[in-house]
Length: 211
Image (cartoon, rainbow, N blue to C red; front, side):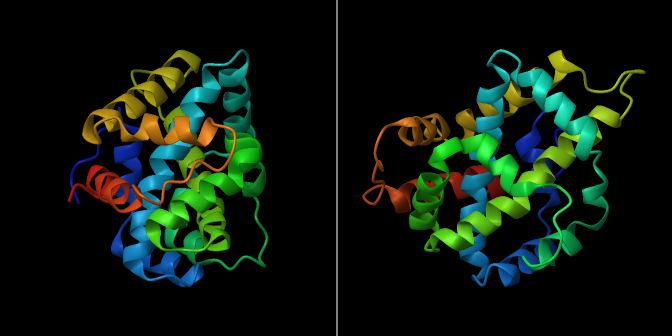
């Protein structure tokens, strides 16, 4: 595990994904660890990219700040393996399905299908991964908001800057594949990635897990 860059949310998320956490998550979604890692390497940057897009819209940043203050103080990070291993029938205090809907709207299944194609997983398993990862990303943001940095936690300007910087840096690491992937998801129709899935998956995996 390498030192985390506090100005890069994607790298901070990578730093949380220990073998124990990934193993718990793999067991939860009934997938092998390699497929789970591939899916995570696409989902986490894509979800952070969607957050970055959302905060650029009028009222988007304030809505995210309100959500952090209400439900995401960072305490989820205290037992990350426990959350990742928790079955779907147990209570979800983070309202994760609502987060996913807010991020992707009616493109949720398109995202799941495309990521599943890249990772060799089915739609339901990918959606379950989304549900587990979404509150962790917001928990990380909430922790940053509640952490004093020079006497001040994360404010709206800092939040926008963190998301934008994280997305731009990942773009550089993956030769702009993240923006291309997200543009495809915004198109009407399914946007089939089958011909590019293996190549894209390798690029995302390398960019996320630094392989």
